[in-house]
Length: 293
Image 1: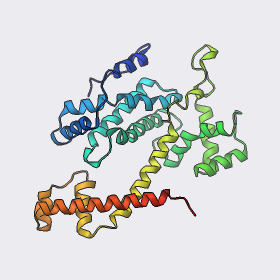
Image 2: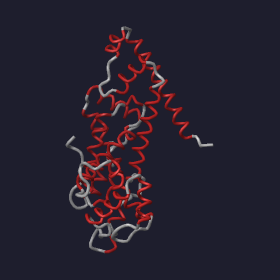
Image 3: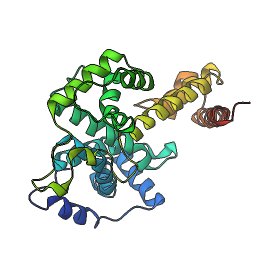
Image 4: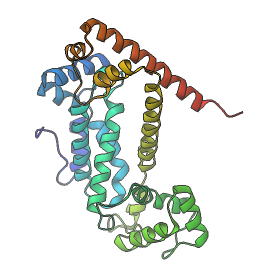
């Protein structure tokens, strides 16, 4: 989709925001039908409408990453790439809205761009180091550790414990951050413009900490799903997995040949398996949310 609006030139961000506001938001039913048209018929016009209706979501998320010294136009562009990936993979029959599904893809795409762009973080960076990279500045602010140079030992221990990383990683990352770019550098020549660190957290609640929380929630949901699959018998699990969890779902016809039953029977088993999984997941979530006695 090369005909999407772009952020460019002086005042480009304001013009871009004005332009993407012209694209209408979609009602749930319209979104569902467009997603079905794209998934089943590869209707590019439907996909384009799905993407453009969510460009405001990308912009809102991208604003939370303004503090890394990178052109906002490129950050938005990377977020749009993530959005297009989300539209490509979105399954409207799973029962949730595109925005919910797309947020992870948008944030992941932006973060990968940031990690590629910053000289201090290489492609081989571990998940824990990425978590440290996106949270160290915030935690230093909470601890009021504003002094330049190394962190105090007690601060190192606190950050290490809270982020579950080694103290050596905390010390190393702090030194590399300090050496790569000054967070206290002014945004513009006038002193009243503020510093880069002032822009680390957007006014919207879509910062890096939210992205990490989303990932943890996703892992929790996967855990619930794995537990729920254990409630199915072997045939139910095979049909449910082949129809609902596969990147290339099998048709009712294919499964009817595999099990030697009618397509309608396969459909009934799929529906029953889905209901079992749904109930099991809901039960696991309720138990997790219940207060400990």
